[in-house]
Image 1 (cartoon, rainbow, N blue to C red):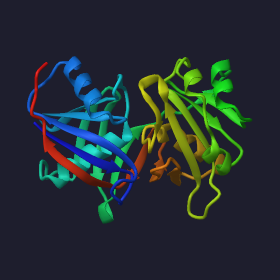
Image 2: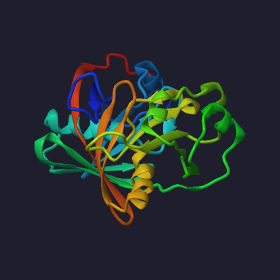
Image 3: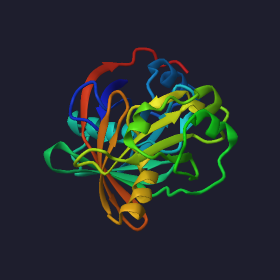
Length: 264
């Protein structure tokens, strides 16, 4: 069984967000996929199984399966094309979040078509506020995450959350964002998922299903450029449509190998 690592939302090796991509020849039990994801110990491992004209795609962190993951979807499409496993210009993925597609763009960019996941204003739990440890402009929530807007990019960059407190927050994670302080970038973010075993995710495509419509409303623009300012950093180009969002990024393969043990 072939397994790869690709760094997503970057054109430079060892930047962006690394994802394991496991190409399966037959269905495997959930427990097997969870064990492999724990062994790989990256924020997400993607499991692909060809099914007719599409691929069944599932994503696992070292501790849990997740409903939506952008960077591992981008990495999966990149691997399928780079390794010659498909000649289709558009790849269809069936997932827990419905049908997702990936299409080739110019200069090595890949466009993911994802559902919008807009937030709504909410009363945040005290553990979220205490774990944040700083003033905030706004807090909202969608079906997966809390979204927190801070006053400046500097505040986002310098944030040091209390992950022990955030582990008790009933959500997949916390997205922290602000307007950008740099030319050519509209907004920045950092994303934290201690409840599913990932304290900080380097670059989070699925978070931009929330961030895109959030900043579209505030900036009155459908096309946006985003920067996730983790230690590894990553760049995303977004186009917000009425019910879907196009998330564009690049990817680089850094490792390929064979999974030698396939016990359940």
